[in-house]
Length: 72
Image (tube, rainbow, N blue to C red):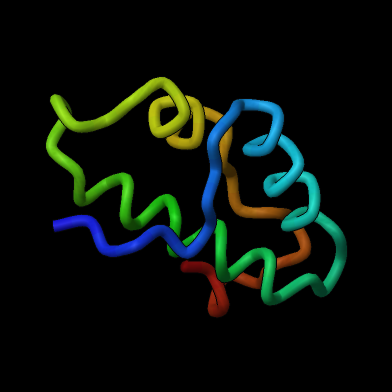
């Protein structure tokens, strides 16, 4: 079951802002929050996912600055 969102993302514009912040070099907190959000979305049943959840799954990619060992 989905816990309270780490991030409270209500629009695709907000999602884009969170992703952009997570891509900034060494922004570990933002990166970790996006990883947690995407993990939560993966736990949702397909029927419970909304357009923002779907967009997060499509748009989120691990930033290049994150080493293979540190990836979520």
